[in-house]
Structures are given as C-alpha cells and as structure tokens.
Length: 628
View 1 (spheres, one colour):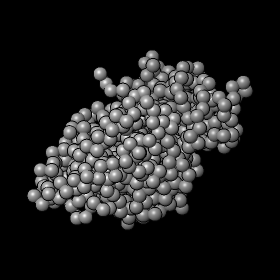
View 2: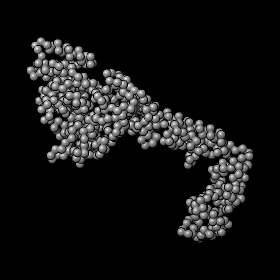
View 3: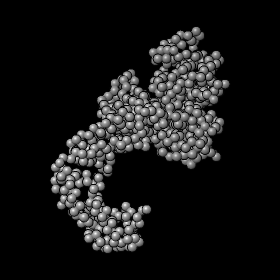
View 4: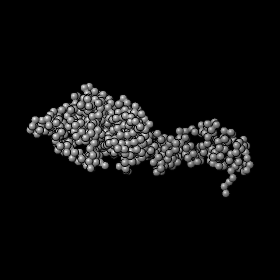
C-alpha cells in the first residue's frame, strides 16, 4: 500500500486541529491541558484512507513555545499542509513554520484557508487575494488556496482529492537505506511493556531486524510493530510507527533517542555539516558560537566551528563542524534547524554531510575538501578527497557513509578506478600506479648510487605524505609482480645484480674474504676480524646471497657465525664417515670429529638438524639415511 506523511502547520488557533478532525474524524488533542487551553501542545496524529493508499497527518503545535514538537513532526514528513485563518491572515508563527519546513526540505503542497464563515459577506475573495499576495512574497504563489469551514463541504472534498493525489507524487528525500526511527513518544502498556513511536525514516523496519537504541548503542529486541493501530511484520518509510520493545524499561529511553536497524548507524559528538543562514537572521553567525540544533526528535546545544573560522553572513552558506557535549545520532543527508539561544529564534538550517566525523582544526583544508565533495554528491570526488586526507587511501565505510551508499555500491560505482588495498581500505588506482612508479624510481636511484648493496632500507622511500597502508600495498603488489624483492626491512629491484657492478678492486677483495672463511674451515674467523673496508659488509652480503657463505646463529651466546658452504659439505661427510647410521653420537663426539669448539659445533649441528642431515634424539643424534 502506498503511503505519505503530511505535516499540518500554521499559527496557533488558526484551526489546524479542526481541519484534521474534519478530514479524518479523529481527535488529535488528547492531553487534558490541550483540551483545557484549546491549543495543541504535543504532536497529534491521524490518517486518511484512500483506495490508492493512506496519508498520515501530523498536527503540529502552532504556538512558538512548541517549535521543538513542530520540527520533530516536520522531520519525518514528505509534504506540508499550511493552515491560514481567513480572519487573521498570515501570522508570525505561519512564517516561522514555513521557514522551518523550507529548511527541512518539506514542500508546502496545499494551503487550507479556515474560518471563512466568520468573514463578512462578500469579503472572501478579497481576503484570499491578500493571503495569496503575502504567500507569493514567501515563495508560495503557486500553491493552491482551499477555503474550508464547517459549512463548506467542497473545501474538504478538494483537500481529500489533493491528499489522495499526493500518494502518486510523493517527494523523494535523502534517507538511509536501513530503518531509522527517531522516537517522539515512549510509554508502557499493560501486558506489552515498553512502546516507542515515531515517523519511520530510511528503509523498512521489520520484526526480524537486528536493532539498537542510540545514542546508548544498546541492542534491543522488537516484540511487535504497529502502523495506525494494526499489527504488521514491518513498517515502511514515512509511516507513523509504534514499536513494542522487549528487555528495556521505558525509563531507559528518552525522546530524541533513535531506534535503528543495520550496523552502519552510530552516535557521535562531532558532525560535518553545510549550513545556511537565513536572509533575515539577526546577525552573522560567528566561529565558535553556541547554537541550538533540532533534528529528528533531538534538540540539543552544539558549538559551531566554521571551516576557515571567521563568520557566515546572512543569506550565505558555509561548511562547518557541530561539536556536541554528548553523543547524538543522525544520518548523512539529514536536515537540521539552527536556532539562536537568546532570544530563541530560527536563524538557519544545516544538512549533515558526515554524521560521525572526527574533529579537526578550522583550517584543515583536506577535511574541507571532503565536505565540499560530500555536498556535491559525486562518489568519485568523495573518495578522491578522502584519499588526500588519508595520505593516499580511504576508509571504505567512511566513504560509503558520506556517499550515502553501502560499501558494495561504492566499489561498483567506481569499478577499476579504485583498488582495495586492505580489508576495509581503498585507494584510487591512479594513486597506486604513481606510488609504484615513485618506489621503482627511488630504488633505481639508490642502486645507481650504491651499486654493490644488495638491498635498500625499506624506509628510504617512506614519507609522512603517504599512508603506511598504501606503502605496504605498493610494496607487496610490486613484489607479487616480480619487480622487487623484499627481505625483512630491506627492499631491492629484482633486476639489480650487485655482482655485476663490482670493480676489479672489489672483486679481489671479495675473493680475499671468501678465502679467509674457506681457510678457517670449522673454526671460521669472526666477522670483526674479517670486515675491514667500507665495502666489506656489502661484499659479505653478496657472498651470502649466492650461498658461498652461510650465516648461522649460536642462540645461547647470541652470536652469528659464518661458514663457507664447502666446509658444511665436508663436515657432513666427515660426520657420516665417523658415525655411519644408525650409530648415535653426542655433541662432544661431533666436536671432536670436526676439530672445532662448542661455539661452532652447536649452531652447525642445529643447522644440520634443520636441513635433515642429522636427526636428533634427546641428547644424541644420528646421521639421516641418504636418499635413494
């Protein structure tokens, strides 16, 4: 069934409740104070059923003391019905309600002119023209005026026809895809327990949904869902919805809390917004001003931090962050009302760009670029701006939140333009290619300057302008392609061959180093006695890389010992000749057979254990059988 939600707005005592009663037969003033004072205090709810669907009507209080209730009702509405008294004309709260509706993006589709039966005979057309002229100055010159009264049945019929026509032309607003229910009432019902109500924003809210209460971030269970008094398995966006909750007391919920489905919603103390100041605001709005913020059913005070500082003058817009004293819940695209604290009056509105942003300094150009991209709404621009802010990469969940999509949709929209560089992280493919080229060029330069060094330190190309996540992905991707080699904290071009770059002097010195270890046999020299010149460590690395020399570690002594590869082969043969399998031998017996010391025999035997030359059994070993 198609549904629409319409808020009924206008000045106090202009007949909003009477119009709703005439349309629906329902009484929306239910509190004793409302009946006694003859004015609405809380939101009132009623509905009209038509063959093509149902229109929910929200009767907003017209008195200036109840602006919070009016904003709460308008936040969930898709259109507005303005009520104007033919006797009083357009009054101050009429204008205030129109401002709020416009700032919230709720279009006025009809104007019901009430109390026409109180006009002197023949004055109706004159009064209608005066009202039309005033509304024209407020941008509503094309909205139809419909006279209504207790005796004008045609007026109510015209309103019904217009409301039913609205069902086929429901304005599309920016809402999240998952259910988001700002709570405007909470109470307890005998036999049921806690019940909350609100106008559902976002997607459907189903009994099977996993839901939580914000800002408490408390999981709750849905016991039942009702729409207009009928139990259903789900409610649809825009419908007045009542939800029976299990496992939570009514005292634990307050008006302004939000019931939401899906894991993407979270409360925050900081939000990015684009604000607009009304043309007739009393003064410019300054950086670090405190303002009252109303959105959904929430009203609270926030400190306004303008990007770039300074102030925003009347009739202009600006990007800013709202800093709240306590966490509040909103969604990207949600509209807000800004009011001055004293005197209390509406001064402007705002659109949420990021509902849980990190606080930044007012001069943060990168974050400002993200806000500008969010306001533009292009997914690619948003991701590009986030990549600049994130030093080359972006949090996929943040990009999806700001783009008002899910992560899969972001990836699908950008296709080959982005690459997932780690779980939950993306980068523009162009940025990756540039970073790869930078790394390759850096290594090429390093190898040209240090031709006999096998590796460069991995940190040689890292810089504060590039995220470590991106650096890691670039290195791994080039390694997977075979373009570079990685070894611990070292990196090199695969094509780099230090041996080919040796001068004759260096080659002669390399042969001298090799000879010292070859001559040392099972009692090789220490590195401190061998390495003399500045090139020696690099020459030693070349010998180890081609496995001419093998470095072993004596764990007990925390020392590295280096053997010539020929010594290892000869030692294995010597032990096999001395202790043919299955004969066992001790470490001491092996030491004696190889004419070495414990310093060298322990790492040598552990090496043989590792490569399968020997097999250890407690304190003894055996030579492993030779393969067939």
